Length: 271
Image (tube, rainbow, N blue to C red; front, side, top):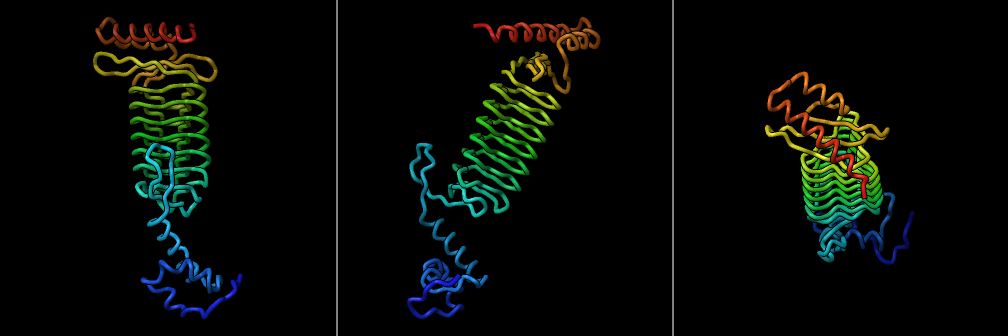
């Protein structure tokens, strides 16, 4: 592609000099031959430098327009205070701002936003209208999509999925091949892992030694109890602690917690 030359073309050496690169953008429009790879790269560098120093964008977070640029891989807006690796993709309608970091082969696409001090890394995917913010981390091969939010100090990793209108917050962990969907809420110190599929709000309770119990419904309607690495139906949970702990304090406490969670869980759908 040739552009009409309106005046004599400067020497290529001048266009490629460090002190001249900030002007290369305009010079290419006026003079240049776009078939030269070195000049194309100089053009892109000049454009990036110009955007970094002069461009502002309003991320609609109450801070007004801030220094920002469009990420070279995907074209999405990235605040200059955020950090996005060249290998990561930020789609044209996606946003990364605040002190957020996106690196590795992560992808932020659709209308998704990553902000605050959040991290998205590895091969993680954040898309749809999803939000990842606060000190949250999404890593590994995890996916966050739909209208899902991951925030607080929550972590989603491994091959886990968080989607639909689900919320994962606090110090919650979702990992393994677990899936949190529907209107589910996972919060506090809750852990969802393995092949668990959570579609309703998780309830949690702590034993006196700090052991964390959670209860939730899976996609098939069955109710599950998790505690540490244990993953039980309610009858299995009661049998386990009756057999292994007997009449000890922790055994009786464990059984009481399971029954309490079962009862509170049964009240969730009541108006």
